[in-house]
Image 1 (cartoon, one colour):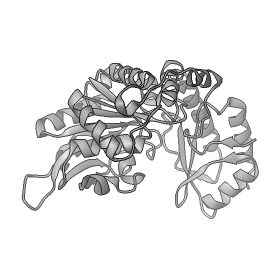
Image 2 (image 1 turned 120 degrees about the horizontal axis):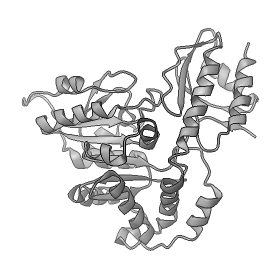
Image 3 (image 1 turned 45 degrees about the horizontal axis):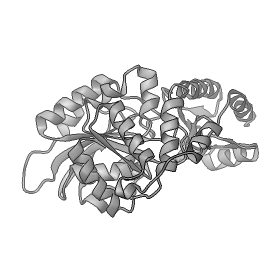
Length: 339
């Protein structure tokens, strides 16, 4: 059996989750008649102190809907160069919304209010309008790095002063919250919209939820439809999301503990360099030449461990609910045998 450290998207539904999925009461969500999808949306909106929410097939869709609703063509979005919306969403900001991207370089994907303020463009005919700021918490490419709430509040203040909206790509927001002790409502008060992924560390098989104001979500529902995201009996999937929110948040701490254990073992290996600070469930590190990701990943797979390349000399491991302490011990033994 493989130890799959490729991503926290590879999890399988737990027995308890499967039970609630089979028992879910469903309808047609496009007509807003799926009671379980409605319940998930109400639950997420209430958690973050927002007025409404929308269940979508993926986090890329929730992010892209947010970009579309918050902006208009010839605007720009300000974000870190490591942001998921820039790195891994196929240039959707341009394709769907006709907007530009203003890339900043924060520390491990974390922006500051000063960086954002300095990036806002003056209103000139030949410049795009700085209309939206997107922050990612945790930042995947930054090694699961966490936004301190003080940063979020300060960036929020800049956005309010400059007439910009603030969207949170919260694909792993609960990984951040269990570490900081902040509440979902603390975060929700500082941002205009949030994308919440259910299919990563929370362990649901499919889906993300977008939260915001009633007016924002009303328009988001129309954009979801034109993007092909209007689902029918989506309550079977929504039930998994509700179960994940009720049962799988606190256990994220276990993933973080295992990630730190793995990072500590990596730090002892001579061919490992520049391990990113491990704050949550992601471990990113570089390889000392001549070892390459292709060679290491092939060796790992032959020895029962799956991981991913994350750059020319970079590897990523991700902990999740299907990874146990004995699995990490086995993975460490395999890594120590690299010569």
